[in-house]
Structures are given as C-alpha cells and as structure tokens.
Length: 285
Image 1 (cartoon, rainbow, N blue to C red):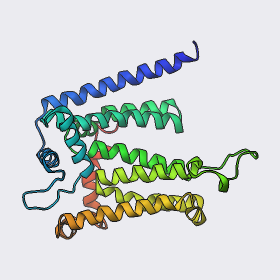
Image 2: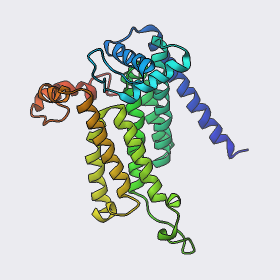
Image 3: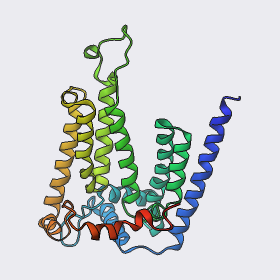
Image 4: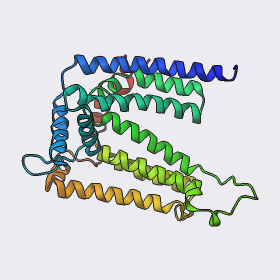
C-alpha cells in the first residue's frame, strides 16, 4: 500500500493541475470571441466535411494546418455539427495532453521536480491558454513537436543492452528491434508535426546535426536508422508538393514578402520584437 501512495498522490496532483488548466482554457473558449484566423480554420473544416478537402472558392487548397483542419472536421462530424465551441475543443484536448506529456517526459528524463515545474509553467502560460482555446493548429503543433523531439532524443541515445544469450541483432525479427521501432516512432511523430504546421521542417536539420555529433555518420547508415530518415525526407517532399501544387504561386509570393526561411540581419529589430517574450516583468517569474 505504501508503494502505491506516491503514485496515487502524483495522479491526484496531475489531475488537479489538468483540471485547473482545463478550467482556464474552457473560460477562454466560452468568453473570448473568435480570432480572425479561426474563421478560416472553421471554414476549411466545413469544406472538408462537405467535400473531403479544404478547397477555397478560388479552387486552391488551404494548406496551413492541414492536420488540424481534418481533426476539426472530425470533431464536427462526431458532434453532429461544427459550432465555434466544437471547433475549439481539439485545441483544448491537445493542450491538456501536452501538459501531461511534458510532465511525464520531465519526470522520466530528469526527476519529478522538473516534470512538475514544466507542467505548471505550461498550464499557466498565457499564450498556452490562448492557443489551447482557439480553433487553430498551435496546440496540436506543440504536442507533436514535443513528442517528436523526445522520440529523436530517445532514438539517438539508444544503446544495445542485450544480454549475451539474446538473439543477435541480425537474427531478430524487424519489429523486435528497439532501435528501429524508436526511429520509426520519431518519423511518425515528425510527420504528424510537419502536417500540423509546415515550419516543423526547420527542426529536421538540427535533429540530423545532433545525430551526427552524438553518434557519427555511420550510425545514420545503419539499417535500423536510415529508413526513418528516408520517411522524414519523403514526408517533407510530400508537404512541399502539396504547398506548390495546392496553391500555385503562393509559396513564391510568401518567400518574396515574408519568407518562411531567411537570415535575420536586423538583430536590433529582432531583439525589440522577441525580447518581451523573455525578459518582460510578467515573464521573469
């Protein structure tokens, strides 16, 4: 009984934190009117419900937050209609799942204090409350990016600890190979994050660099490793093709006016924009 008590207290504490986070987000959902971008997501979800794809009146595809669009449409189908509240519910659920995930990962990789601090910060962070209450893709993106980065870390740091009497790696069935399963899980989560929002592509070079620095180039050539990275490359190519073919000319226009990728040469301007997110008086605590 004494062994179960700490686990029970942990579950009760996490449940109370999730209840608080859920209450804050539910108040936002019911008391704050829709932001302009939410109308676009809800409209795209209704197009999915009606025709299977978010096709705009101009006959081009709405590609931003593709996964969120389909999840929102699914919520509307399950609820029997897509109201403003129903459209915001997926973000609420993904927001709460992210709090639970960051607690579990912090506790697993470091200790309980790290898990509690991370979960508490995310539960009360104003932006997290806002984006967990809006019918957009940010809560979903945060959830899958967190898990994808953790899966990448777990795959990179893996070491074969098989006992001498265990079957050799070459004789195991492929689904019994821990290294392969870890990398395939990373590829799946990365793909979900990529289709939640395309800027996820910017994470891949850093993950690849971390792998090279940590394990070396030969590690990437192992048969349990390179298929997952090939899947990531194929997912990025598919996402780029959807962007180019679904909205002809749009990608080039965005790159010319507000590029997804570019050098930050205006350091002073960037600091003026982002510094309040780090050192504003209400941020320091």
